[in-house]
Length: 146
Image (tube, rainbow, N blue to C red; front, side, top):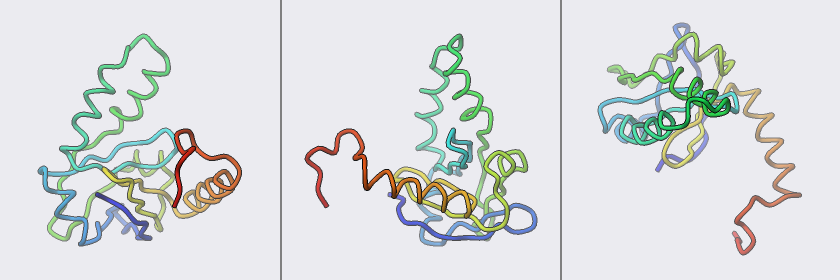
């Protein structure tokens, strides 16, 4: 279960040092997968958690324009990577460009995976989420309480 938000820095080569507490769980399936998300961030999955998602995306109808868009993003940007000896992953220039990742990034746990955001984009997304949360509850939360 990946949770929490951590601010990290990419090095000059575009490598991200995965926090020690997450390394074993991320790398347990023999590596990780980085890919793009339609919201404009990068996604980081353990390889074993990514495989069923890849299968579902590949099974989408290729003649549907929306499906092709998802396939282009999720499959087209997908990169299987090992963690290096220092627990780092190299984010490709194409994926860094797509997600506008510069130096300071946020690693945001989403249960089965992480989102990787450029800090200003994350702050904007978080601000929008907070304003929506105070006015419009998400579907399925009618009887939900904290």
